[in-house]
Image 1 (cartoon, rainbow, N blue to C red):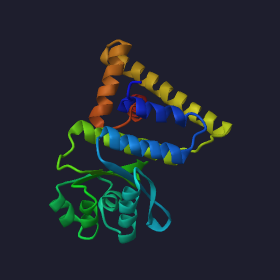
Image 2 (cartoon, rainbow, N blue to C red):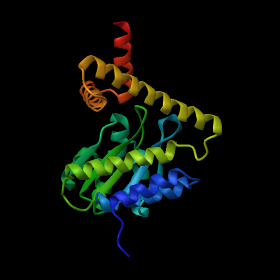
Image 3 (cartoon, helix red, strand yellow):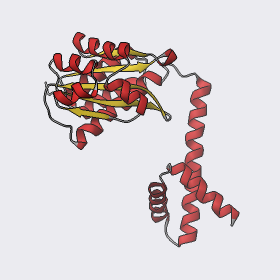
Image 4 (cartoon, rainbow, N blue to C red):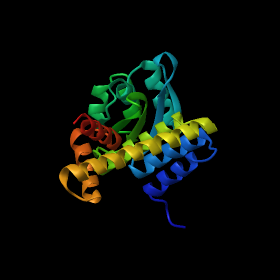
Amino acid sequence: MNPRTSAQALAAVTSALLQDHDVTGLLAQLVQDSARFVPADAAGLLLQGEGDVLEVLSATSHRATELELYQAQHDEGPCVDVVRTGRSIEVVGAGEVDRRWPRIGPEITGAGFRSVYAFPLRWHGLTIGGLNLFAATDAPLDDSARQLAQTFADVAALVIVQPVQVDQVDLLASLRRALEGRVVVEQAKGVLAYQLGVDMAAAYDELVRRSDQDGLSLTETAAATVAQAQRR
């Protein structure tokens, strides 16, 4: 049997989200896969609960669970920092870990880990938790590993936030929003094709370029293009 790739692991979770699924089981698999593919030697997931209290959702081992609980109890550590700042954290080397977190650092290094990495779980601009990876080496992550770790954190946020069931009214509303967005994009393509004297394919490429340039979504850029044309 061939081992799974990270893409296959993420695809399996995405497929599960389209059906009835066990949230706890999916999160456990995601945490295991994040440690395997990033790679790291252990991983844990903390979620911000009521009253801004951090709670452990999942971990790859009992020791990793203890480290996550210790962070939550003492309000210190990589996941605490990542939830507060909304930014990923990477601390490499046992000495650096101990200096960064005077209470939790020695617990981490005492468990045999020399580096820690933490990535935010984000939802609509809010940081709702953190994915913590522990490594027994002094190796920093490369860009591809950082991107993969953040992807695992993003998918974990989807697993947590997405309801298991969506009623028909909500489903139809979502479908309608998707179709309305597509209509706006087509209108914007027509506007640009007329204004620039290009075909629809080139107009779409220009719309995508403007979206990237302005840092807006494709729908937002399309709506602004149509609105500007209407004002003229």
